[in-house]
Length: 208
Image 1 (cartoon, rainbow, N blue to C red):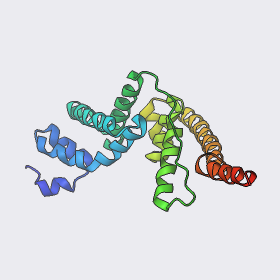
Image 2: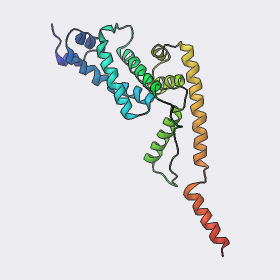
Image 3: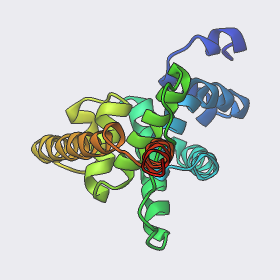
Image 4: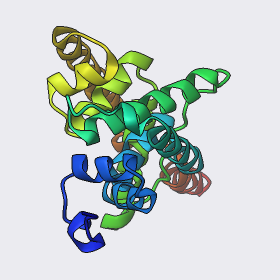
């Protein structure tokens, strides 16, 4: 008996997968909509570009559909799909030519509002993540951004759980150190408008 669209929409992933493999191709849209945001976050966190993340995500979904009959249910569908997406994103980053150091300069302002400050912090964090070594960055993204557990992360990246823990510890330490250094530079910086203002005042005073 064919499962109704409404019932299928409420079904667990493995039942939808079975329906698609069984010929109900339209049901694949349910999987795409259900997991699009998660997989996009995975791709975006690795490639650091909105357009490239969309390209990766689209290709990943095509690969997922093409190999859907290979899904055996030994892990959750979301883990299996994330693995394909992460691998596609990593493959893209490895094809790139080396890029210049990511600029994380934030505009100086005496009283930034909360939204500006949040955006600036986000850019700073993204730039810091981008400078992590390849293997460490993916571990931190999967554990701290996508909130996968150690076992899932190890499975996705083909690592031992101990290797995941070591890489995560080193990545977190590197990010914390880099953020602390850059934030200190921003807080105690005396360049830009403030430097110009003091310089003008001093020069005006000594000209009297």
